[in-house]
Length: 476
Ligand code: 2M8
Image 1 (cartoon, protein in one colour):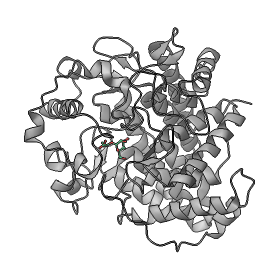
Image 2: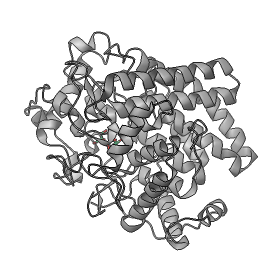
Image 3: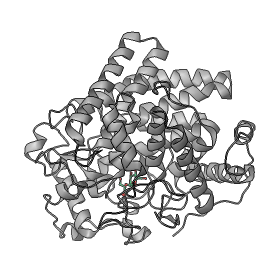
């Protein structure tokens, strides 16, 4: 069931050799091994005009995966980074939503559930024949586009020119994506985007949704009509339970029945939740759009993006902060209740530079506590001290590189340079010792899930190469 790695043949490129020789607590040989194996993973997962997250488990194109992947491709194959982002946005819907999966017609319907026939979406976009899902994922793409753009000059004039063209093409599409989330998706009228399916969070099976999901009917008969495919290619102990999966299927059927329209959705759909991490990424996207707009010469638009980032930050603080726990929680829009679960998503708003001191202090206390505490290992996806902490099951305990990358960015934004460096070292060491796995055991570091996973590889490249601080970071 494991994806095969090709033999070690990739050479360290000139650019990476220079980056790898910089001062770093792991040895140069270790760093070279991680760099070379990461580039091999990104080679075997490339599918012509997009990257698959993993060949067996995820044989299509995923939305926020493409963003994290582009951040790493920027060092080794910038043209592919732009190609991946472009092919994703070619599937954007007229209302601005960017689908969470764009299906590859070369992959049989039977090879992934839920596939295109199940989603049954209208034929939208330039990639219409491919089909897509009708839900979204966190809007990481503006951050990614800016990261790819700012590295282009290092690859020469032709790459810089390509980057300019691609950025100009993407900018209005990124703006439309944000407009969709700020408009039709503000189901709670709070200035926050709601997710209408746990898959939209990217943190699919997180305990953050347990309270809200308890109100969603679990019709197990649906799993007779629609057979799970994930259990054929992964361990059932890692994956969501049948009850949760039946709820996932039921929620898609409910959204699909209304033609994926958001109008009046609150009154006819059993799940609508405001996620701190999804909305923090939305805020970070506005800051990246401000940088992009400034670069493209749209000064007034840059100001408007910065204002929006501030408003999103204020709404996250107002609606998702619990002064008792001193961390952020998901809010069920249908009941108004904050989830009691303390998850890594509660730490991600640290990415926002305008977060007030009280919230920064609370997140730092949480990040340093026994619940999430940085040990030799990066931060787990769920509170280590919680009764339901699960070392194996998806997003209910294991370590994921992408959310740790977001947390590191937050540490840099708020001037916690030492912690950011410790976290970076912990991530590189974890990947070096265990491989480019999808996720990792939170006590032993053992690799779990797909073994050649694209965003782990891509972000490893970035962690090896980059120690810059976002331009909008607060002074240390
Ligand atoms: C996982 O999500 C898919 C459904 O979209 C799944 O569980 O089958 C999540 O980890 C998600 O964040 C990720 O984008 C996707 C592909 O890597 O896998």
